[in-house]
Length: 255
Ligand SMILES: [Zn+2]
Image (cartoon, rainbow, N blue to C red):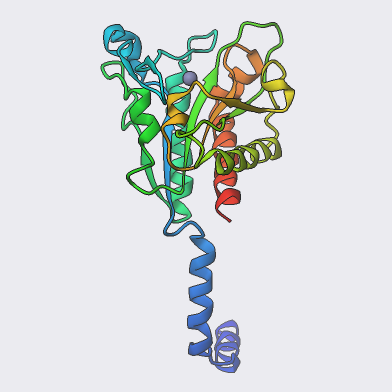
């Protein structure tokens, strides 16, 4: 009873809130909670799981930026058989959830991870951000190298190739640098076997990058054939680390 009286006294003595002031605070809080509101992000979880079941469809030649290329490939896997398609899918879904929580609109290039599906082809993946006016596009992959001790992530951006990538190669490089910094910050090691050891690679042969009109990178999260990278890729905590890092990359790029 005594405690209740004390509580009432505290409530009565508390200053009345100022409602005008509170509205401002609420608006600022909402902006702080959804810093990506109004932004459109395209995520491309590389390779459909069922690609290997459709060899003819996957080897169809499609435009890739001034030349033709196979529609897609099967992707790689860990030595334990965990497929690249599933890694890309799970990291992408975690990343999507995080970006949407921050207010972004997220579009994916594929809507399932299934053995009875294939594609889309690299030309469709390449153009996926163009019509929706995306602020950026990230393509998520895992690499597969049998070189002894090869491990770590690398980020691939397009080279300057008129007329294909001249409009986006600079902004894509900036996105690549932000992506590298964000992965490093989360403790993911930089690749020691490719991309000159600095984690950044520039390539002219990827339709997924060449056909984009919006800033874009492809990230190889690690070497799936390496035991430590595979452990990060096949555990929920490891995949959450990748998703958290890539969220940081998007935020840094759009800041
Ligand atoms: Zn791949």
